[in-house]
Image (cartoon, rainbow, N blue to C red):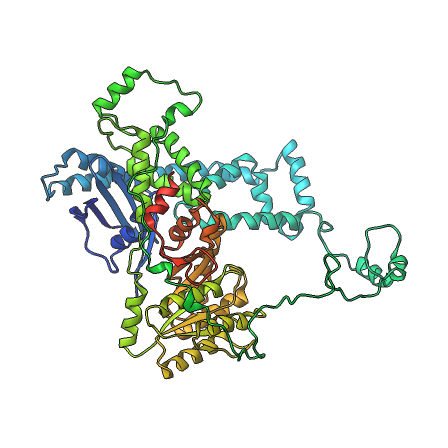
Length: 628
C-alpha cells in the first residue's frame, strides 16, 4: 500500500501531495541523508520511524530539466513492484501540465489515480505470468536426469555428504536453476543488498564441505611425528640432529663503534625524570608560537583548473565532429543530456578522483549521483558536456565536505563550562595513526585560548602509552590522570571526568588504545567507554594516506559501536581528525572518502610533528585539488 507520494521542486516547494504526514518525517530524512549527501543514485532509502514505529522504504525520480523531485513512500513489509513504473508515469504526466507560475495542481488527483490503477494491474499481470511460467518447471525436477546430466549428478552426489538431498535439487536443474537464482538476486538486490553478499560465503563453505576432506585439514599424526623428532623443524634435508648440535650460544649485542672511536654516545635524550615522570622538564610548548588552527589560510581566487580537452575525442572509436556542427550545437543549446553523453566525462572524472586517493566505491557512487542529477537536462548555449559535468561534480563535492552542523569547539567548551561540567573529547582510531600526538596538538591549541585542559591516559593496553602521554603533559604543563596499565579504560575515563570536575578543568581529552576495526574485545571496551561516560565529542583519528581502507575502517567502527551499544540511541563518530596531511601532496581523497562514508565533518588536520602543526580543513582548496 502506497503511504505517501510527494512532488516538490529542488528549492523545497511542495506542488502536489498524496497521503498524510508520516511519523518521523521520512521524506525529510531522505533529503538530509541521501539527496544532499550525493547518494541519489541509490535504488532505495530505508527509514525506521522512532519509538518502534513502522519501517518505510522510499523511492524517487528526478525531472532534471524542470527541477522536480518525485518521492514515493510505502511500508517495507509490502514489496510493491510497481513503484518505479508509477514514478516514471507520474513524472511523464506531471511534466506535461507543469507551469512554474502554478503552485496548486488539484487536477492531477484523477490522473494519478488512473496511473496507479494501471501500474497495479501491470504488476499483477507480471506476477501471474511469473507464476504460470514456473508451473511446467516443477515436474521436471522429479524426473530422472538423462545422459550427461545423470553422469554429472552422480559426480555431485559422490561428494555430497549429509546435505545431498537439499542441494541435489538445485544442482540438477542445470542452467535453468542458475537463471532463476540470478533473477531473484537481481530483483531482491535493490531492496536488500546484503543478502547477495551473505549468500556467497555460504556457497563457498558448502563446496568445501562437499569436497575432499583431506585438503586443508589438520593431521594429528604429523604433529606426533614432529614431537617425536625433538628438534626444530627445518626445510633442509639434514634432519633434526644437526640443528641440535649446531645451536649457537646467545651473545649480547654490542653497540657498533665507528672510526675506532672509544667513547659511546648517549642515545636517550629524554628529560631526566624518575619512573613516575616527576622531575625537572624543559618547557618547550610556550616557544612554538601560534597554532595553525588560528591562522587563516589564503587561497588564490584565480582558478588553477585548466580546461580539459574534449572528452569525446579522447575516447577511441568515436568519430570527431566537425567544427561547424560543434559550433552550431553549442550556439543552439537545445541538446538534452542522455546517459550515453555523460559516460565519457564521468569516466574521466572517476579516474581522476581515484588517482587522488578517493576510494573506488565512493568515486563510482559520486559519478552515478552526478549522472542522475544531469540526465534529461538541457545544455545551455556555448557549454560543453565536460564543463557541465565538472561544474556538477564541484558542487557535489562542496556539499559533501561542507559541515552540516557547527564545529566550533571553543563555543561548545564555554557552553559546557556554563553548565558546570567539563567538555569531554574521546580520540579513537586504528593503530599507529597518531592519536596521542594529535591529542597533544589539540591540547596546545586549547591552552592558547586560556582553557584549562586535563589529559586522561585510557590507553591501558599498549606498552609505553601512559609514558608518552605523561611526556606531553609535562611539556605542556597540564595535569594528567592515569591509573597505569591493565585497567578498565571506561572506569579510568569516568574517574578522570570526576577529577576534572573537582579541579575545575574545562576540557578532558581522553586517549584510547589503537584498535583494528575487526578486534571485537577492544571494540567492546571502546563501546563501553563511550556509553558509560557519554562524551561530548567522539573524534576518529585517521591517516590521510589510506585509500579504500578508510571506507572499511569508518564503516566498521560505526557499525561495531552501534551493535555493541547498550542504549537505544547509539553514539557514533562525531568528527574526523586527519593526520599526516603533509605527506600526501595532492592525494587528498581520503578526506572525501571518510566524510562520504560517515557523514561526520573533518574538524582537524594534522600537518607536522610540532604542537603548532594543526589546522582546519579548507574545503575549497580540497575540491580544487581533487578536480585538478
